[in-house]
Image (cartoon, rainbow, N blue to C red):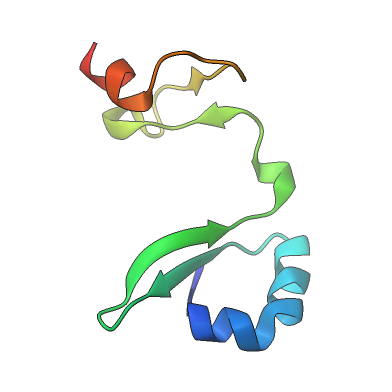
Length: 77
C-alpha cells in the first residue's frame, strides 16, 4: 500500500486511479501533522468480508447491507 497526501491526490488523480485499476492501494494523509483519513482501493477487493480487531487474519465477519447493529455495539456485545 502506498501512502500519499491529499495534495498528491489532487495533482495526480488520473495516475492514481490508473494504479488502483492495476491493484494498487493508497492510504491518504491529511493535516499539518499528516494522519490517515481515507483509503482508495480497487473495487474487486471489496468482497463483503471485513476483518475486525484482534480477529484480523483469523476470523471474518459478514455484514448484511441493512444491518441494524453498529460496529461499536457489535464489538462491545
